Length: 140
Image (tube, rainbow, N blue to C red; front, side, top):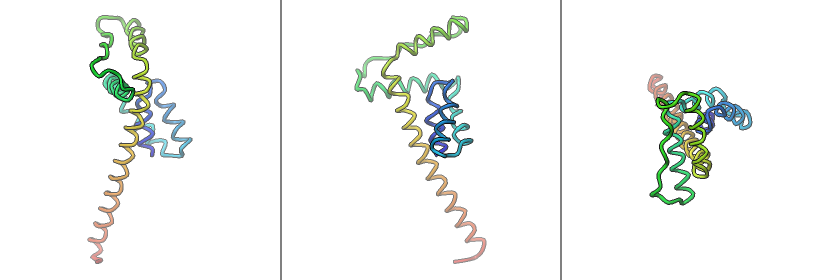
């Protein structure tokens, strides 16, 4: 569950990721370090692709026109850091409902997939360890 909480939290806006992971991990009584570490998949290099995916997912969930596209984000090199941050915030606010619906929906989807993958991998590791131990001991 710590992996699921971390994957969900990683989709939240940057300054709230760790707080979301902390609060959810404590509320759900899951592995806090796992939740905090897993939320790091979202970083300055992955945030725009994640937000674009969340936007498209939100558009799909809301049944919006599939032909419409998301406008390009402001370019950092053409602007100074302060102007880029201001324009990026405005760009994100213009995205509206599809992003607002898509971010938590993507987080839930990633969290569920991460939970299932972790359960399967953990089960495989435990069964493999049992088989190896049984083979070493020569037991039938």
